[in-house]
Amino acid sequence: MIDLKPGSAIGILGGGQLGRMLSVAASRLGFRTHIFEPGPNPPAADVAHSVTTAPYDDIAALTAFAESVDVITYEFENIPTAALNALEALKPIRPNRRALAISQDRLEEKAFLTSLGLTCAPYYAVNSLPDLHAAIAKIGTPSILKTTRL
Image (cartoon, rainbow, N blue to C red; front, side):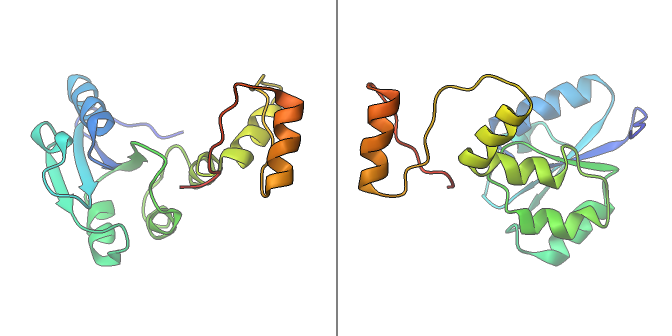
């Protein structure tokens, strides 16, 4: 458990709308936020205390970012896990790296949730046309076909 005191800095990987909302909520609770975002002019930049604009594979920028905050989180699941590998030795990351890895693979995510006893919509792994036909025969239509990873 991390005991963050008011005035502590929360590092947020990703500066989109969720990062913006997280920054606003954190500010209301007395926390500072530092956004790490590869793209220019992220929405969260308007409300965060600090912003680093650099690619997720820039180890020097990630290190400087980690050194400026007390804890790190992320706003969405599309953060490369390699970035978290570099950061986790420097600062606590919540949710942890394993949670990110699970959320980045839809089949792994469904299997994990099912293993916890949670109910998921019916799903089927489809790796070929025969798999697709078998899935439709089992699940029925309408159905949605999605990639497992981005």
